[in-house]
Every structure is written in C-alpha cells, then in structure tokens.
Amino acid sequence: LDWSTGYVTVIFTLQGFFKHLLTEADKIVLTTMANSYNSGVYAMGASYGSIAARILLQPLEENARLLWSRLATNNDNAHLEDSYTTLVKMVVYIGLVF
Image (cartoon, rainbow, N blue to C red):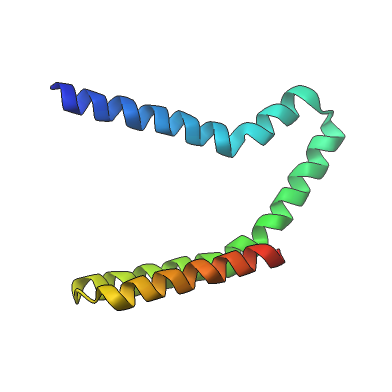
C-alpha cells in the first residue's frame, strides 16, 4: 500500500462520514431530542416531500446522463455545457416551487 493510495482511501472515508452526517443528521437529532409523535410527523412529511423529487427530478437525472454520455462521445462540448446549464436552471426552478 503506497502513500497516495492510503491518502485517497482516507479522503474517501472522511467524505463518506461527512456525507452520512449531512444526510442523516436530522434523524439523529430527532431520535435524541424529540418524542415518538414528533418523529412520526417529521418522517411522514419527509416521505411526502421526497415524492416530488422522485417523480420530477429522477427522470431528469436519468435523461441528462444519457444525453451527456452521447454528447461526450461526440466531443460536443458546446452543447454539453449548454445542456448542463439548462438542467441546473430547471432543477433550481423546480426546487423553488417545491
């Protein structure tokens, strides 16, 4: 195991812990500080809130991946950049609505 591989492993491990903390911090705090009723209400609201993301944003992500892989193989960087900025704008607008 050389130094650069160990360094990359440590960085990815720390990144994984940080991501876990960011994605699960609300549940950790609720478990320690809220009663079961409030935790249930939060879980139900979070579940319904994620429906919009699954219905609207998941197809956008899948289609964008297909488009970008096609554009990347054709070395069409101008259209790649334009489609990326358009998608980011769409996601921001959808995020502002929901």
